[in-house]
Length: 499
Image (cartoon, rainbow, N blue to C red; front, side, top):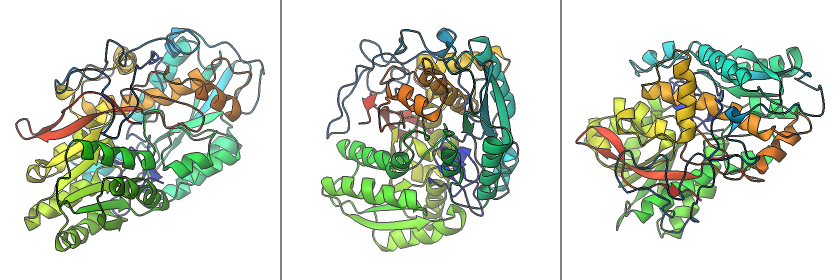
């Protein structure tokens, strides 16, 4: 599972539900501090017009290079809102027709139950780990607001959506919570699918995905490496994220294309100490470096960024590492590594991705002296840049925020937009996948999602693509860098396909 070594779901936004030790609160890739994903009826993505990826880091697909508002919705054959596969304009485009099977596990002729993981104790945990001032909207309130919207616009399969909440304790054991949540949703109050935030201060394994899968309940807020997605082809989804194996390769390729490494680069990687991230390094990052003639000089597995980063940084300095990459979603690893490097007056070139929470964590808490030499692979605008630097929102993100704004929420902050985007995408994917299904089952959902291709609009990324064997949707990114002039992250190139 994609761990984070940090405090809570948010920081583990891309984590497979892992946890964070002493200073960590594990979370699932979709786990935003805020509730889980509920989707607003968002416009579908339409044809993206993306050119195929190239060895030089991906083919540009629209927009000018560096303007902060040019890359979100790409016009002229780029990424824009458009029609869904069935000719509608997304979930909000009209009510789904009731499926032929009138009832089944988790649904009746009139209602459908969806498990929702939240963590009401998460905000309180942030300050204890040094992220003072970081907070997110109340998760349960966001979910209820979106469910109300969802039900006004047709529900799922023509049925009224009923959320079944489970509250993860941000200071508890995530594995214990996983078992309890699974029992609640598969035995006590059966649901058709589940999504949301997994959090906890101890425990490292994702016990939720396999437990739900055994009962045929899809987990819509997942993350993990390619092998994990392959193991759960009909029950694991990450609408706006990239599996860690694919991401590791894409980051290396994109950075290499921009000349990030340079002659004589000595590369090291810090990765979350769990099987999924170890496989991502072995099967994604290392081969990608080798393909460009770059050996991986040093790698360090990390269970707790807050207690282990100082030692890792000193080992990297002793080994003469010049370029540091991270495979430890959540932001704690680069933050703590940079802090140690600054204290020791060591300097590196850093390669990051959206999984490292550039605008949410690094921009706020990491030393500017270290950030000055940081470049990145940004596929999630709400995590990459502050709203003041953000591109024009995609049609899906605009629709998502509109739902919450009309429900009385403040949508202006980056943390709010991040939480809301992770509330929108999973529900929307369920509604689209089950739109014409004969019954609401894991098999029929997978069949429907597999047919979406590039027609599904996502709030959390620039564009998405789904296909058999591809349920981690994110399909586009922009080059990212830290700008000392504004002390902030900015996009430095056009939207490109991830591959």
